[in-house]
Length: 216
Image (cartoon, rainbow, N blue to C red; front, side):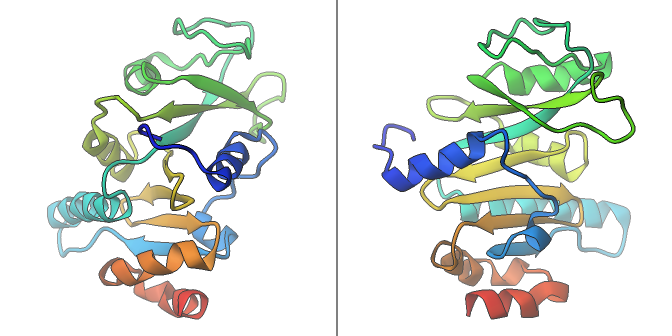
């Protein structure tokens, strides 16, 4: 993105992200072969732990995205299928997200740059199928001033859950699961190996043998 010509591989990867039948299994690390798991929260007290979690998230983000991600995406609950314009969004899908009032402010920050929405076939087990589903919003970052640090802080503190960042060239998805750590999933060993080397100081020791086996 960002003015660069999109390659055939970029298009295939983007198509996969847009496919409503694509299964986004979390945690990324345990459901994908080519993935890295990094540790965030480190420290002896709560403040030190959370400060390190945010600091390390920003450092890893800057390593993975040397400029900025091409896009990010997130899922939002549909609480009322009849509410087709709850936030003034225009889309050819015809189904809009209606969030609880306390979520509106955070959603608005993300949605004002959103160019498209993809309805995904996900329902929550404890809610009747016709009452709740999820929509997937894709936000392209070209020519936009987006406060990525703010989104990262939300992710670390679970204020917003989950925003997934994407690099089309490196074919990877970056996702913070909470203050403990984050996952980065790749489409191939070739795409992931350079980042395995760059991110060794951040890799979670508990899963290091699996990552060594995959990328060395």
